[in-house]
Length: 427
Image (tube, rainbow, N blue to C red):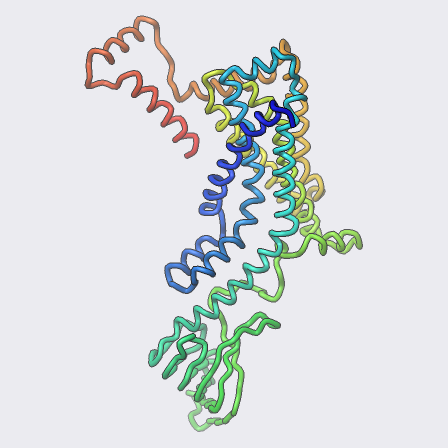
């Protein structure tokens, strides 16, 4: 790698890393469906530090599949925005460097991001999604044991009233058990047992309470003379877990390994949802390469004094891409569109746009499209800066700012203008 390539790569790599950390943190807190459940576990002290760490790691791959392409785009636009604002891009052009020559270090960053995102999306994310489902049941069993206090009637279980005399320190063994089953109100069942253990049935994805040395009593409130009594040495009772996902024995589509979906597609037994999921796992990582084609000419076209233009362009492009991507996959899942086109059409559209920008960027005197984009962004920024009046009014305003300390000075206006611009933009 030549000195120029190393310099450009360094300028875009570090902003990408910073953007990846910031975007992942925000997306983890704002958009993860499991974060509310995790916070509830922490507040209720149902999860240990190890559980919290494991759950966070299990959630992270699904977040990274979206934030890695975003970080690549932000890094390219921010890095080349800095290069262009310092007039280094003009020096590159004066040295005879074409846009294709500058594309090598940028494409290297895109390949790294694409490889990392592809490995996470196709291999890591399905496994972590399955592990997350297992953690839900393990922690749910622990919640049941933690909520059962000795010598207290517990009604947190659905249609069950549980009473225990003593609990073991680990919480999964109880002594002196009374369990009232109100599933059938006309025939309540009351079970007494000397001891019991709560364990997880991995085969059926359920929790089972094993009772020893006890008896079961069934009586009807409407017919007190009808009374049955039965003793047992050992019996097993299924314990319903509150807020358990439906059909826990069936893995979700996100948990199915990529190889399994591929084999179904080869044998033509894959459903439409599985085909959409397969193309989604591969189309999203390739957005890193597409963003390199779009980000380079837009970053180079940033004018001097507009270093923040890269961030604004990144937000707009990311919004457009993900709206098209999510909309395409949703439409493809409803049999109204091809699964392949639904996932790959946004990449194709942005790739064509990037190639057009690359070609026009090399024509210094015919760069109309980039100029229009730059003018549009300057107009967008000018909305928040206000309209300037005549030269006389501006002189009077400057005079009032200078001679009347109670009013804002020019520096204050400049700082506040930038603050409110980004505040409204992010909001």
